[in-house]
Length: 567
Image (cartoon, rainbow, N blue to C red):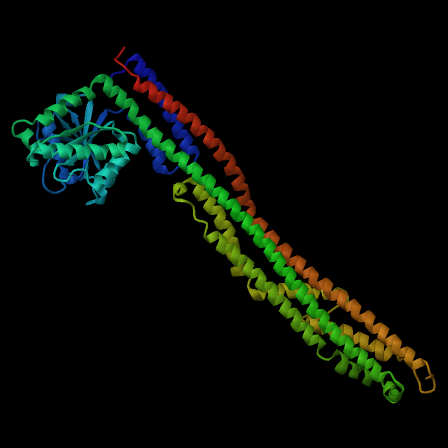
């Protein structure tokens, strides 16, 4: 490539821009192939001018290249004969094949002075008959400086060709449209019709009118073809020193524009993903609040049921006092041990078992609500898949790892914290609280049994403390009624104390369980909350940096377009 003063200045600016672009893409954690494209774009500036021939396998690319070069350089056939990319360069020895770093790319030399300073690239088919062939061709496209897009007169501008041309447009490549096998068209009208069809299709994809040439490789090889003569004239102009310099500088800029556009799309997708994730975190907070409301509802219900059991006991105890502390039962009052046993049987009755069952039900409901909460957390996060735009970026991997951490915390909690274990923890907490009320429980004694012990002490008060010192001779007219009033008063006091103690225990267990759930959720989500804050700041800076690089890119493009004759 001719390197004049103006071209050298543009080269320096372009190398700096491509280096900054590569650094930017790497800092943003772009997919590996994206950063590799940036490195390739920079290397392109030091490579030979690449004139790349693309088209479906049956478009006759190899015969077209041979006709264009005026020599039998490439093998021809009716089946896909090109299973690799051939880079044809001028050399002293004909047919010398040199390997390259890419196992699917071979360098082929031939004494062709017309190729001096230009590498002509023959690619496999663009259609999907052999997938690897298409991948090879698409992968090489970003390296092209000028594309000769070959289609066939008998099947002009197929869908696969349209898709490939769209890819060329995305990479900003300069394209020359060539219709081969024009000898199959029998009339000038057919020639004009096919030419117009290809031109219209190309214009629809590229957004501009690329030159279209109808040629016949067969006629050219057999004596000459007018279409080939016109194509050679245009290529000679396009491959002049100045035009080659312009295209050589423009091609990496087209690559840079596509890479920047892709990174901007990934940035926007990442920002949208973060906004959705913030809504998800809000949903988790709302779930936590709903969990609290559910637990509060359970709390009120449990307290009401415990209060009802104590009220029923109080009614039975009142009846017992009224029935037993009367003159008609004087002889029974003298036997305090028997009276105590009667109190346990008739007043206390099923209260300990009923309270045990009630506390068991309370624990079961707390456990069930807790498990449902973590199942909801897990289900909510499982649905959070990244958009395709940010797939395989470092943002996607980091975000996925943090979300998996939250979901994993939910899974671990559900897997390791079994209902039995959580119930045991809650039950132990409740029993520990009861010890403070009753003054000590034997190991393994249930809550109801402990309450029974407490009420048993009340029975001793009724039968021992209240009736102590009573004799037949000491009973006066007002003694027994006063004892009955005293017993009712003590009963009210004991039941009130017990009700208050049990409510305190239940509320404490509710608060503890809420604190546990809040702490687990907070610990699980805190790293991701920090991540969203950091990423929002990073993506904001990425937007600014993209805009700066794009402005430099557009200014450089305009200067390249204004490149004139060499200085």
